[in-house]
Image 1 (spheres, rainbow, N blue to C red):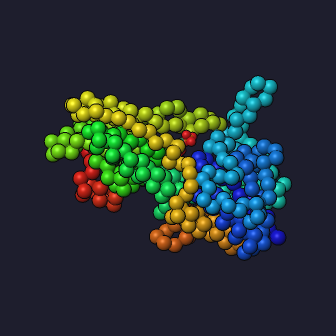
Image 2: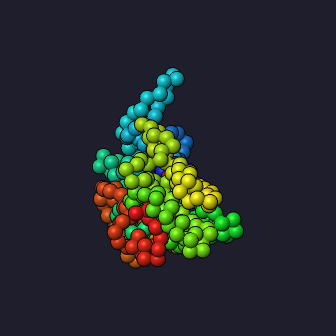
Image 3: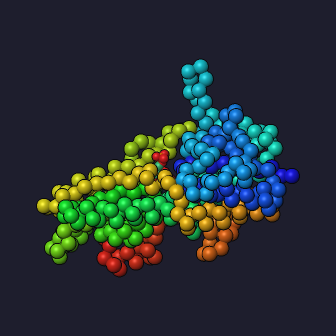
Length: 362
Ligand code: F6P
């Protein structure tokens, strides 16, 4: 009988539990594998007492639940791991120790459900001999090898619902509403939320903006009789020639760079550029990551979970499942983390949005 491990790494996202459930059910029912759940991402392979057996019985009811029953962290990089001894903190490479733990646990394969950070770690560990297979996760939808990551669709739905609500209050008060959404260095959430939620302007990292153009759009709308406007701003958006708004820099062995604040900045500039109009800013933040996955994400997560165990059975270790068109396929982990999937400024959804008059500040 094979024994496989499963962990969730990086920021959480809707659908993680649905993947865990599909992995456990497929492993147990289809292949009679034993599944070991590893808690808190790669931390679970470093720290003691962070593993437990998962069975179809003890994971009952998790399909619609947000977050991850295994816990996660975006700070446990085994190649740059913070170790505190005698009050002194050092950053160490403890990847060998982690590999040993995988052997001690008797894992024939380890399923890593993660975003670009966790999958990059997974790819490096695989090169060192760790039997890893991957599942792409992130609300940002920035993983190049897959058309869609699970969690993205739910995040867009959550943000779209917020826009629907903001429309009514914006209209009542004749205000400009600026909504800052997540997405780090790519604009997929902002773009799709903006289109689905009827935004008037969308600012994304891939298209540096000229605030004057956004003011003109809002002022023109006002002249035309529209007394409210909605502007969706991706947290990674930046003005032409300007910088991304950073809350805190990345830390070796700690947090990645944290973005935020561009919504406020855009709000202030619109306030002075759109005379007579009141401006308010809403930052959606982690609301986009929490909560129950929608039906689309439950199905995609289930498909990924089943497919990743099938990969193990077919001895396709070192690969990641992905969605290409309507089909679930797989790619080598190294290819999966080669680059980020960015919004194209000159085709596809941006062009669709511009055709219906949405302004990108250019
Ligand atoms: O990568 C997912 C994501 O939600 C990004 O959109 C966002 O920039 C980041 O994680 C926030 O991370 P944290 O949970 O550490 O604040």
